[in-house]
Image (cartoon, rainbow, N blue to C red; front, top):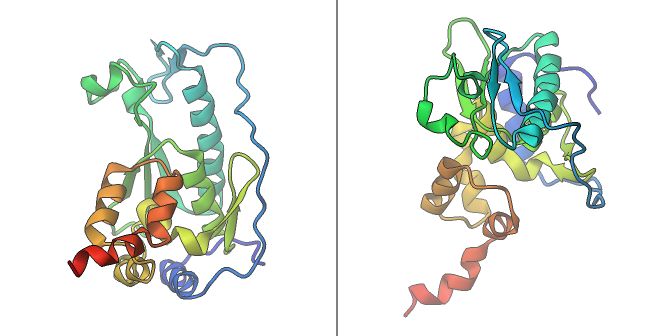
Length: 219
């Protein structure tokens, strides 16, 4: 099991192809239900850019998640990756979109940026799911699984789409990877575009929901 980061983009692409083309052979753990422990209500968000405070109602859980994501991204940066978080949407003074901030505690105002060379533009993705960052972190370490927030482990082989979402890597292999899981591309891209939470309906779709619809094509 690798313990060092894979820094080269070509090596990451090669690694992603290997994961997409091979099944996961390890064992996954199924953690017990648990909940994010939060401190006192942090209704005041302190901007990392201007250091000013912005008040948000029911913001404590979101703030704890942001802090956890910051730690993961910091580890990526310390390893040599060009990554950063755009938190401007949570700040009254730095926000670009005033509409989003009206109910920002329910919205995904956090934007993750990553690039693999100074010559390319940053790949950007809007997400505040810790599992997205945990999956990417494990992939960059060369692992084939990652631990979720509830001590449950997941195969990266089955989350190629998530790595693509977070990095832009693997564009050429996505269509084949999706086809092998019997998911229609238009349904898949709608899920990816809408950034639907990764719930049981999503996994049923990836596991071949369309098998139940085969008969409809022959009517």
